[in-house]
Each structure stands twice: as structure tokens, then as C-alpha cells.
Image (tube, rainbow, N blue to C red; front, side, top):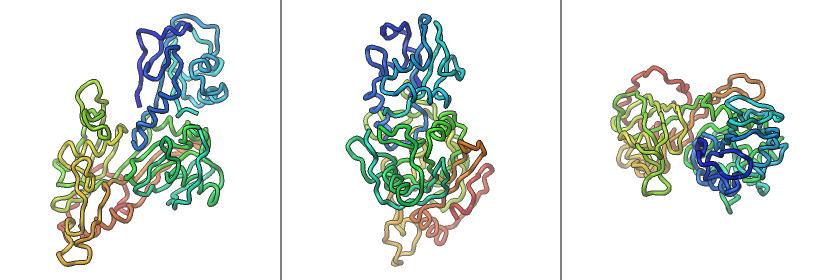
Amino acid sequence: MPHPSPDPAGQGNGQGDRAGQPDLLTSAGTVDREALFALYESRREGDDDAPVTVEFTLLKDLDKRLDRYLVDRIPFLSRTALQRLIREEAVTVNGRVPKPSTRLSAGDRVVATLPPPPSSEIPPDEIPLDVIFEDDDILVLNKQPDIIVHPARGHKRGTLINALAWHFQNRSSGALSTVGAEFARPGVVHRLDRHTTGVMVAAKSDTAHWRLSKQFANRTTGKRYIALVHGVMEPLADTIDLPLGPHPTMREKYAVRHDELGKPSQTIYRTLETYGDMSLVEVELRTGRTHQIRVHLSHIGYPIVGDDIYGGRHASGADLGAPAGSPEAGERIIGRYALHAAMLSVRHPISGEPVTFTAPLWPDMRRALTILRAHRDVARPGIAGTTVPPGVHS
């Protein structure tokens, strides 16, 4: 998501202030609900955790409280909802946490993190979920492959959100947080790509949602992924520090970009095992750009197995070393990109206690490793800094 800066030209809205992120603003300087929706929609399958923010710099004193000012600026959110955003520290004034009653003065810089704009009720779908942990405030699951996280415009069935709605009606209690509910994104704190499996957390209360969102926005969460890649990594561990942005010609892809569209992106990888012409790597994210792991690994010459968008190839049993004529040799084992969110560390949004959740590999990746280990020479370099428990991928 963009982190806008003040618009030096101003918006001419009669309130005496300059507004940032002009592509989200109407000519009157108010946040455009449809433009905000389109920004969220463009990231429907991405896993970029950066929030959408908008900022306003006042050019003159206003005899107005912060909450009332934001009602004028973000008209599709109620004053009560905006007061909640302020109390959950989703709004700052001059870099500090304000109160709803804070009075604004000339030169004040107001930055607000915007949830998806306030739509229809999400219909429940009976889709099995692998729940790792659940209490009154959060639900943590091991996301399955080939499912998108939330509905797109006009497609409101068959997503993880629909599955969670059914779960709360029939298997559990509570509900998803209402943050983003009117844009079919209730409870969504972060996302994984459609074919990426592994740990995801959903918020069941609004307070939990905003506190978790702040952790993801501030990069205070710990995220480790497991990926099976083509080739043997050289070096065996390294940091990839390359800016990422939209692909210049292909709308659904992202690419390394050394221009104004490239955003700073850092990925750390550490090799866990090698198998001759493939490697199992643990990946740590320092940033959370869309398709970051896939693009970074492909760019340095080690695309993820099964990721045919970024240079990887689907893998049969024979590709993994199964002997010719064996039952598994002709079977396609990996038909999606072999990427798994193995571990997530956060502070519980209510208790504040640090918690870590791990998710075992899904059967396709586990079976691929079983074949590789049975038929290839396996090396385990023992790189320092790996933190995913061996039981997750053994």
C-alpha cells in the first residue's frame, strides 16, 4: 500500500489544508470511497502488509476537533468509527497519538490509516479449515492452497472469508471483526497469495484487528516461509535487497524496478537442505511487498518450484528423483508454487503476550520432500539463524 506524502499543490477544499495521496481524493479533498476500494481490489491476492494511509497538512488554524475534522474528510466512515480508529492509534497528529478531542492548528500533519471502505453480508460456505488456534479475539489457521482470502467485486463465494463465516456459525462462536466488513473484508489483517499455504491470523474483534494491523504495518511481526526452489543457492544464505514494483508490461506480475515505482524490499533466505538441483530454503521477510519472495528468488536465478509465472516448473515424481516405472514417477506432485508460510510471531492483541504459531507443510510439499530425500543426495548445511522448527518441514 502507498505511504503518501503531502501534496504541495493543496486541494482547494475550503478547509485550509493540503492533502496527501491525491489519487484517493476528490476535488473537494475528501477520500474517494471508490478509489479506496479499487486500491484494495488491486491487491486482492497479494500479501503486501503495508497499510493504505492518507495525510493532511493544515494551512491554517481550525476551530474543530480531530474526530469532526476527519468526518469531513472521510465521509463514508461514521464519527464513532473514526473515534475508534483514533483510540486504536490508527491516526497520528505530528507523529504522535492524539485523542478524538485534539484541536488542530496550522501546520499540523494528520496521518490516518484507512480500512477498506464500509457492503454486503458475507454468505457462509462450508469449506474445511485447518484451525491452529482460536480464542475470543483471534483465529489462526493453516491456509490451504488454491483459495483466495476475500471476495472480489461481484464474486462473493468460495473464499477464506466465506469459510470463516460458516465456521463461526457452525463450529465456533463469535464473528470476524467489522473492520472492512462493508467491503467484504471483515477480519482481514494480512493476506497470502492464492496458492501460498500456511499461517494466517484473522481478527474476531475490532480492537484485535487494529492492534494486529498496527503490528503488521510497523513490521514488528515475525514471518518465516519455506520454499522449494530450483537450483542450489549460492551463497547458501544471503539478503536480497532489491526494489519491487509493478511489471512494466504484464499487469498481474511484479518485477525488480530501479525507478520511482520500485519500493524498498528486503528478503533474507537461509538454505535448509539441498538435493542436487533443488533447495529447500527458509525465507524471512523484512518487508511485505506483493509477490516479494517469488520475484526476489526468481530474479537471482532460483525460481520457486511450480511457479510458472516467475520461471519455475511444475514437478512430477520423476523430476524429484523417483525411479522410472515407479507409481509416483509420472505423477505430478507439485502443481502450484511450493511456498508455505511456516511461522508467524505476533503479540496477542489483547494480552500483549508474545505468541508464535507454526503450520506444518501441506501434503503436496511434504510428499515432494519425501521423494527428494528418498532418491537424491541430501545435504544440510546448518545455516545459523533458521528458526522454523524442523518438525514443520521434516
